[in-house]
Length: 502
Image 1 (cartoon, rainbow, N blue to C red):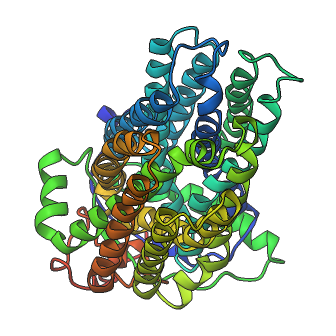
Image 2: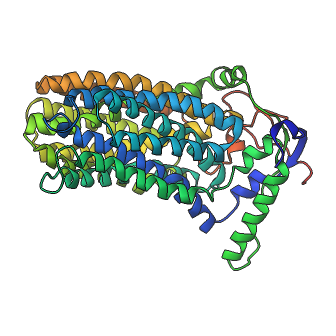
Image 3: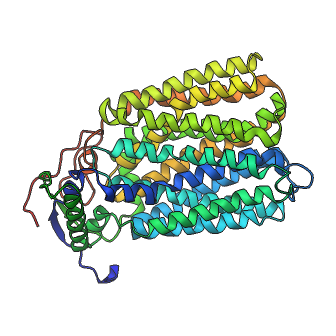
C-alpha cells in the first residue's frame, strides 16, 4: 500500500456510500457490531467495578491507602479526564490516519492501562492508571462511533448505534456480579479480589482485539484520503458476500453518486469553522445532550455504591447485586426503544427520553430527600429513570456522529464528548462525592436535582434543534467538505448531484 505522501489526490465520482447504505443486513454487519461494539461492554465493566469496589478499597488491608470518597471522586474524575483527553488526542488521529489503525491502538492502550491498574501498589499508581485507562476508552469513542456509522446501512444506523452504546450496561451487569464474587473474602483475600476484577477486563479486551483485526477500514474515509480504488474493491467484496448470503438475489440499485475532491487532511480551523459557523444549532444540540447525560451518569452512578453503604447499611460486598439490577434496566432502554429512533424519528425520541428521565429523576430526588426510599425502592426508581436516560444518552453519541461532515466526524465526536463530559463528568463526581460523604439525604438529593435539571434542559434543546436523520445517508444529513457542492448551514442537506459512475 502506498504511503500518504505517494498518493495521488484527485477529483473522483463514486457511489460507494450509496452502495453501502442499500445493503441488506448480513453476517458482515454482525462482524462489525461484534468487533467494534463490544468495547462498550469493557467500559461498562470498568466503571461499574470501580463503583462497586469503592467501599472495599477504602477498607484496612485492601492494599491501597485510599478513602471511598477518593475512589468515587478523585479516581472517577481522573478516569473521565483521561477519557476526555484521549478522545481529543485520538479523535484527531482518527480523522487523519483512518478508523482501523486507531481502533486497534486505542484498545491496546486500554489493555495495558487496565493491566497496570490490577497491579496497583500505591494510591498514586492507581490514580495514574485510572487516567490512562480512560485515555484509551476516550479514544475508542471517537474511532468506534465514526467507523460504525460509516459501515452500517442508513436504514439500521440508529438502532444499531443505540444498542451498541447501550451495551455499556451489559458490561455493568457483568461488573456488578463479578464484584460480588471477587469481594467475597471467603474466596479471595481482601487485597486480591479487586485486582482480579481488573484482570478480567484485560482478558475480555484481548478477545475483542482478536475479532477487531478483521474489521475493515471505512470505505468512506478511504474515498476522501486518496484510496478510492481500495474502497471500491472492498465494497465489491462485501457486495459479493452479502448477495451470496441472500441466495444470489440482485442487490437493490444504489442511490445517486457524489463527486469528491480528495484531500490529505482537514485543518483545525476548517473543523472548528464547520462546527461553530456552518452548523451552530447542531453544535448547541451536541453540547447540551452530552452535558445532560454526562452529569447524570458520571455524577450519580459513580457514587451509587457509596449511597447504598452509607444511607442504607448495605454491606460493601453486596452492592454488586443492586448495580446489576439498575444496569439491566439501563440496557433494556436502548434495546427496546432503539427501533423507534429509526421509525418514530430522532427528534421526538431524543427529546422524549431526555425530558421523561429528567422528570422522573426529580421525583426520585424528592422521595430520597424525604426519607421515603429503601435500598430496594431506590434501586427500583433508578431502573425506571435510567431505562429512558440510557436510550437518551446513547442517542447523544449517535447524534454527534451523524450530523457533521465526514471529514470532521471523529473530531466532532471527540470534541462534544470531551467538553460535555468534562463539564458533567469531572466536576460532577468531585461535587457528588462530597455531598454523599456528608451523610445528609437532602444534600445527596440536591445532586440528583442538578442532574435532572440538565437532562430536562437538554431534552428541550433537542425538541427544537434535533436533526431528522432517520433513514437518511450520512452524506445527505451533512455534505462532506470534500464534495464539490456543499449545502447551506443548518438546512436539510440534499444528496450530492448525480454524475458518472466510476
